[in-house]
Amino acid sequence: MEVLGRYLHGKEKPLRLALICFFSRGHLLIEDLPGLGKTTLAIGLAKVLGLTFGRIQCTSDLLPTDITGLSIYNKTSGLFEFHPGPIFHNIILVDEINRATPKTQSALLEAMGEKQVTAEGRTMDLPQPFFVIATQNPAEQFGTFPLPESQMDRFMMKIRIGYPHREAELEILRGGSKRKELYSVEPVLSQEGVLRIQHFIRDGIIASEPILDYMMQIIEATRRSEFLTAGLSTRGALALLHTSRAHAFMNGRDYVLPEDVKAMALHAIPHRVFFREEYDHVDKKEIVRSLLEKVPVPA
Image 1 (cartoon, rainbow, N blue to C red):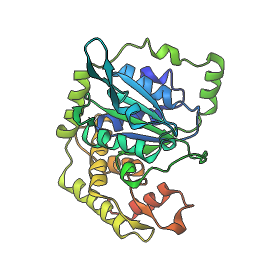
Image 2: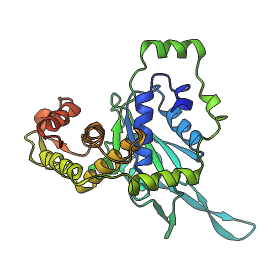
Image 3: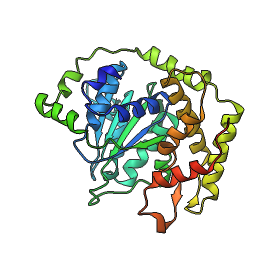
């Protein structure tokens, strides 16, 4: 956190949420305006964690093979050789994902869900850990293809970066962009260390029966809510559990508290549930927050 804080001025909260999502073994969707530090965040995570980084710039003419890779004929050997696409990295930035066609977007579904890619009849495992950071622009709708529900459900969390506060932006104006300096940052973890932390969070952070019951009450509240046509799925329930465990770990605990669940619910639930048409203009987080207030917190 401290290392990346020098390059992401005023973005401590988005950075923390991105790390929680990463260590939960999920994928992250960032919906925000261009130029607010999304690429810097992705590169910084890869460098600090000692992982490889790939970037996919989505356009309307992007093809699935531009993501997965394809076989090219080698004149010397007389054979077709598979050339892996950018998906074969640990951390992938998929920029402006909603500018890609649905067919190209679907090339990411297997990778995000199964951590593998099927291309030209071959199924290949992706490197571990594997983390997708996708971005979409909420203000620019021309030439975009909205993400289908099945793909939205693949993202463990959806966040916004937002504008930096005044002092942080002044610091950026004084010193300029420091993105190039990120490439010389020394990793604070190894790939093996990252995998060990992910394994510990999944298996070593305790979620007691009262906490699981509290989560179930929240899940059931979304399914009964007058604001929603469909509540949280089982995959969404697991996302809430995994992110709550990671949030507890980031706060130095090996057990989950109701505060962890409430903090993560605002980022793990809104993009996974279906709101009634008359509430489209309402802040989705506020609706989820109102549901949380009605669920009694375990002592």
